[in-house]
Length: 97
Image 1 (cartoon, rainbow, N blue to C red):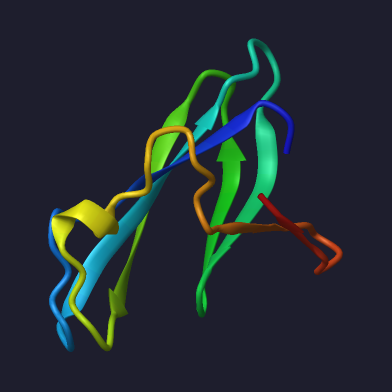
Image 2 (image 1 turned 60 degrees about the horizontal axis):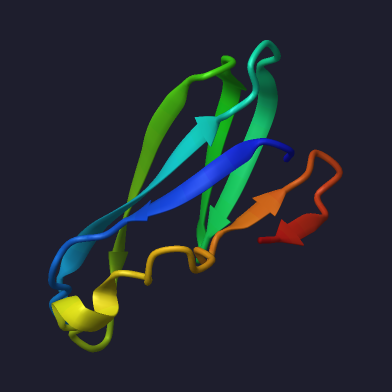
């Protein structure tokens, strides 16, 4: 998971009971080497990238439904804070980042 960067993509508002599109940008910051078999776990959703070329960035999205509404001030993580997404290794173990 070296030199991979994750950034959350969330809407300005999240409404209770409605499906909300969420996302994560995955960027490979390696200069020459691609990353293979990248799996991210976001809640109950498992996201998979078979290959991410050197310098490439991709947006992965999924839908989630929340029990309560979140105002814009709390929906976005503060800049520089960790995003609650787990990376899952091929052996099934997880690395919380």
